[in-house]
Image (cartoon, rainbow, N blue to C red):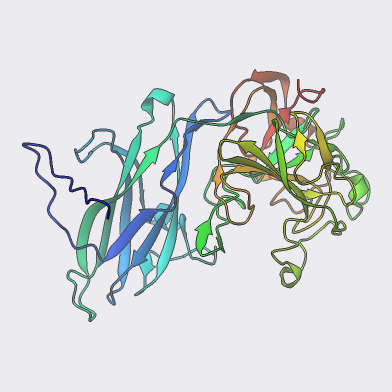
Length: 398
């Protein structure tokens, strides 16, 4: 029998008194990784799971993120504060729909999406805590009672410095990072999925890459024809040395213009034709929506950085040709959490204004050439952010 280890407070250190907490809170993952973006700032992205355990309805009033770098001391340094509309806008139901209200019913669970920004790496603490102010049950009685005002600090979260560094998944100029990190309203950011008995945010750092042609167009001619998209059929590249662990290459392209009927999407076809690479050290690369018959690699095959895996297509749950790419901490694209990374070398060539975001525009026809900078800005060891226009090296692996 293993011996029990009893951890006692250090001499002179008092343990905190117990507190009744009708709403329980925990990070979805035990840790997260700060990463540098193309804005020159450091970003921290994660989720909290919030559950009301009592028949008395609970109403969230304020959530604060605290700097908990002082071990054993409750921090008063507030890094971010959310209340009112700012709080509600970050609440999601387990069905990935907006919660629309700060009230949580008996047994109800919400997901609270957080993204923090720091001006410098030195400002990023190694540990966070969270102050919750709410009204809810004032005691453990199993019957409803008049909601009382409550406040407590919960949900410690560690921040780890290790970040994967990879090469680009594509080659050439004018690649637009669509549906990218990090705002709570982004298509990928809020796409939690229940799989294998847990909730995973595999796409929290995913990017949908589409390409502008020489005239600044995403598509020329009839947008219902996949061949008229500037990115269609482009080579998809291995971002690092690795081993192929999963391949699907049997699905035809979806007609562009709208997403497929959700009723036709299954675990088997939602990702489209895809490749998953094991990059080692618990890091996996996921490439989705590739062209049928284009994939050149097989499961178990070793690949080198810059090797061509296949071609960009429009298979699976997609409305227009693009490469969906992200890194994750496991071999399953549906049952693994996404992790941030940096790309070792690229150039920031422009940025699409939010009001012209192709993901929400009425039409993706026309020219986006006005979004390009006069001179691309070389970048090293950064993560492309939403709506960045990126120039990757023309020669794979360089």
